[in-house]
Length: 264
Length: 313
Image 1 (cartoon, rainbow over the protein chains, first blue to last red):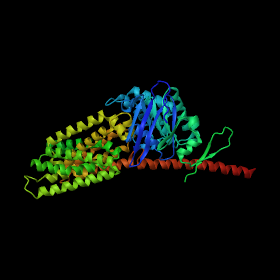
Image 2 (tube, rainbow over the protein chains, first blue to last red):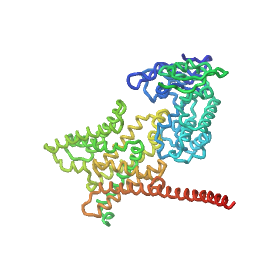
Image 3 (cartoon, rainbow over the protein chains, first blue to last red):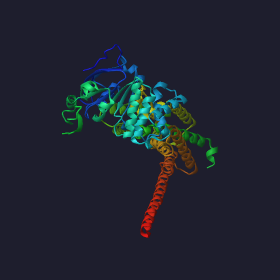
Image 4 (cartoon, rainbow over the protein chains, first blue to last red):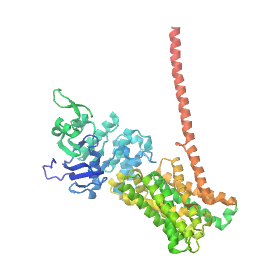
């Protein structure tokens, strides 16, 4: 299922045989893939399909039963600085005594290493990254006083500050308004222009074709992975979602229009 | 009251209490923010069997041995909590509860055993357990000074790391920090602060000195650095005022008075904290209400005048 890069370029991320189990039953089974550099990749699948789990296992935040992650051909552990991660917003307590700029500067901590403290340079980078997500005016704002969308942008700015080349984002579009969604997608395209590779866990099927170069369909196993045009098809989607999607057909371009998951 | 500044004994107690409050206040900030408010209680109770075993092995009532025993027991307890949370579905608060009761139960058994047997001079063991600041000597104060310096230096050097693991430990791991090691180090620093505190305020009350100053400090600031320093100051102030009141009266114990002072500071913070305090909130709501009412009246006025105009037309 994996698409290997046709040229001799080393893939930014190659995962082999990733299997993860929380209790007994594996939630992610034998997932192997290799991504192309400079692409925006959407990770799609129903709730409980193991999308977040897969990301966490790749990043070593969740122990895997088996599996290997190579980042630019080397083990992930030696390449951490190249990898940026935007966790789900709910994963932290936003009442923490700190402001937006301070959170963004945390993205520089890995570069600073142990004991060294952030200074003027880190501050400048932090401000720059806040400006890129349109949050420069909120630098000094206590983080609990930011709206959900603003908090999401602060997390994105933190990932930017990290200056990674491979990014993982866990549902950055969850619960944000249209303005923030637009700001985020502009940013993703900017990252892509810089030749960076971004994997995004995504839920809104209606925007997949518009946003992503490649799509990874997951439901425990890897259902399909490849260019959006050939992979994001009705047949594959039904496979991933277990035949619970309703499609409206008949528009001239013959592209499937997804109405809703009918549930069960 | 004057004797506080002339009596050398009291001076040692004053300095000791302040250093203790400073240490527990600073390290308590991180325990509180990491949602481990129960950790102080757990470690203080876990110290009991450590102290008893130290006494049984050495046969002497030495503060140094007691502290070693308590610290070792506390470190084992922290490892136990980490192990339970990592290898089961039990949440940290329940894990702390389990460890607390097991260690304290064992400690009580050992303590009874000691009291009913012919171990050397056992009197005063209970005083160590339930705290007696008045018995502090210059040596104890030097120990506290060492501990305070250790904690302050550790928190200053690792401020960035402790901040990161307190806010977002998953991200810290992603950045390549050894989160498990940092978390364990932080727990051990808390253990040292708690064990030193037991001697002054006792097993039950030391937890209050760990958490109360931190919670109070949170009411005054939205910045972690300021909060840490403020928490240390609140702790030191509690120790100082506790000693001062204790010295001025006949027979009130210093430790509990320090805890009560810390609580008074907490109540003051809840009431008068600049933005999160109750009074500030009430004032904000009152002014908002008044402004809204004024605006509403303006609108109502405009509406009524429009009506009048209609009528006149």
